[in-house]
Amino acid sequence: MKVWRSVCPVGLALALMASPSEAVQVKRSGIGVFGSLNMPVAKFKSWYSASPKMGVSYNYAASSRIITEVEYHYAKMQGGDLKSRTFVWAVDKQAHNSPEATQKMTFNSLAANALFHYGSLEERRARLYLMGGIGYYGYSNRVSGLIFPGQSGTTFDPTVKLNPFKDEGAAMTFAMGAGVSIPTSDRLLLDVRARYNFILGELRPLEEWGILKTFPIMALDFVVGFKYFW
Image 1 (cartoon, rainbow, N blue to C red):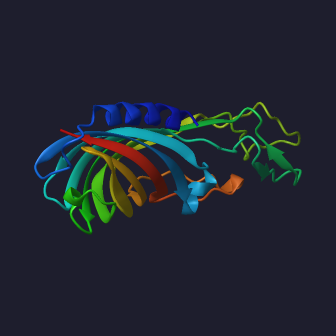
Image 2 (cartoon, helix red, strand yellow):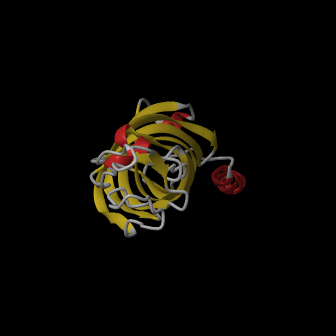
Image 3 (cartoon, helix red, strand yellow):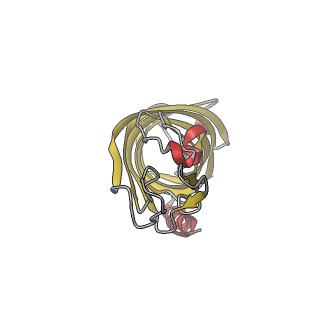
């Protein structure tokens, strides 16, 4: 997957930069890169399937157990199936699909997180942690090419289309999860986590196609990243 081909070389470069004599200590800053699998949950699953997400972060070791993060990430959702979804036209009682339908959704997001570890990271051992975060998800969902299901007449006309539309905004987001920080070398951490995102944004319903109103937008992330401290 492209996201892992992007993250892994950067993680290798950070590992080569790491000093052989110092562990992750208090009051240090760091940079990070990560890739994740972003899995839609609840009604959001009606729109898209699991998709790659990648990002960068600024990190600060506030204590031997607490790391704070400011992260940016980007995601382009995959797997939309509006082309194959059907609606029943009231006149002929037949199911029809919209073969020219297109859909595209992207996220550009900024968030702040805090990681609370069980045990000191200065001991150079893998440490479990709990995390919480807050931020904003800028999202844009664009749809076009859907055939108008409310058309009148006695003959079905596939050229009569709904107007293209988009749902977009900057929505407050809350995240919570758990993970493990693994010192792979001095100054370098491997970060593996799972987190749940509550995005207070809305996607309109398409009830004729079996899609209900989506609010909030919810997704589960499975994340792998690298952090380098100096």
